[in-house]
Length: 246
Image (cartoon, rainbow, N blue to C red; front, side, top):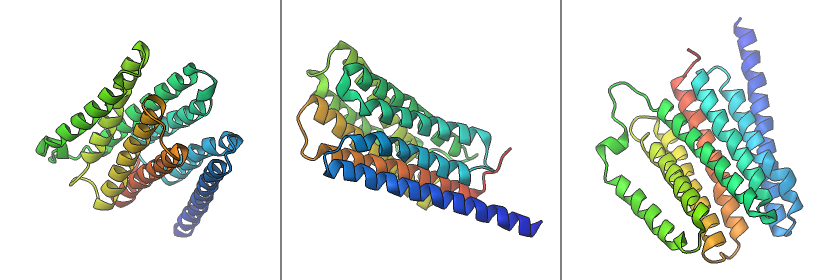
């Protein structure tokens, strides 16, 4: 029994390593496309980012609670949809709207995931004890929205507001894990959430306000790091707490 369990863990480790190698290849492919100004690289490597991260998560979370897996796959899958739609954003405004909508659903998935992972009896969420942090998020969101407002049409005014609320809500839920979850897990997930905010802010500013030098490099750098850190941080929490199926 013990030997078979070790063999199972070894197989899982090898599968996980394969997915991480695929993610690394995807990152290199995305950066190569940016450096070579070759848009066609995106069609191969951008979808591979979330496919490989999703595989990495599922291999390591196979024994964990069903709801956790559902929320994580939800966020990862709709991030994949968002990446795919945004690849074609230059072909018409609908692709951008569909991409934004997909990432909206992904952020909601992350919100539910962080909330589920943070349910510890007897402990208050961090924001409940330090509500002033909310003011920083509101101020940041307000400033960015005001900067963009005059350049948005009626539909985008609503869409961007809703998405920004979900994006910042995701980061707030990541902050809520402070003092409740393992420090390494909190650091990874919260840093990832902030990089996600930075990445999407850069997209918005570049598209609706003013061109940003090397925008694709900065957007993709922060985005890829964000997704990797969030997934890795979640797995660190599950690894330390052994959240098994129940």
